Image (cartoon, rainbow, N blue to C red; front, side):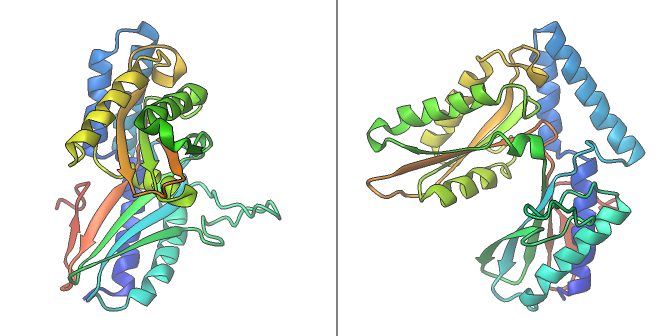
Length: 295
């Protein structure tokens, strides 16, 4: 049975996994970048990153001092009981993880300038809901760092410029960001819907593993083209020059109004932290992105 206590426990585990262990696809992309990097300075940075990844796992300490703003993505089966208890369970999990992992407190009231001290506050942790069929509950934890978030871009492009305008918008965003989002980055691109929908899609695109091509062949080709173009900028690892500026580009889209062409770019730093688990109706837990407890 999917209980509030079980959701809380799984969410604590996900936050711990997310901030300590990178998903397999991200680690493989970093190793590939290290092997392919030709710049001495860039290769040195990637070597340091890989050693940091190894040390975090060995010491069971967070991979970065910025453990991010806590965001959850929920795929809830329509037959799952107790969905109304999930928000409080995730809030409780955030408070616990802040104390137990520990996580750096990153929830600040924008008007009073006071830190809550436990990573919770108004609409934080933020929860994205998707209702699916069945009776399982899938939870993804995305601790989103501030440096990469600060260079996010949203634009209302000229519809007549089409994909050509979109390409320019994305690469311009990468150029403006430079070293600020701690490259090599993962780039999420959201297109269509409206300004709010585009940025939501862009951040959601960051959840797709780097070794899973876009199911739409035309979009997959565009992702590859943007990936190659971004890596031609020469920004390189940590902005010190080189060929490895991005690890991947993922695109999500919605249909748009004829008069509008909304687009957004979400950046994820090299510490692309995410963790997902599925809770089955009988209480069985399946960790999808990491190994947990030997399972």
